[in-house]
Length: 139
Image (cartoon, rainbow, N blue to C red):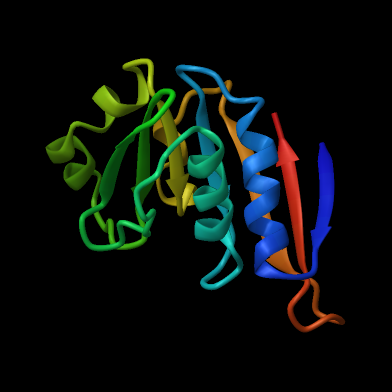
């Protein structure tokens, strides 16, 4: 496990850029953490590092945003998912196992579907420091 402290959103973004260099086709990255902890900032950095020029936004309402850069990237947000049937309707397995990179926010809601070799990124606030974040990377 790697643990990094970021003190500003830009540092979280830049950590994502650096982390992107370790990713390869087929990787599934599961993000854990509450609202506003920086999951999307980290993902924006990953996308920039993988050559995405588009404006990367959280797909809270669309569930999945697809981007093409150096690789196909699927940015998935399960915040609004309530039932397993919804996952089947969108064909989640097709995204997880098609050779692109899956970046999944609110992964705790779909843990049972994720491959065992996924990379976990857990982000939380450090209570004693108002805006600081602790980012733990486990693979």
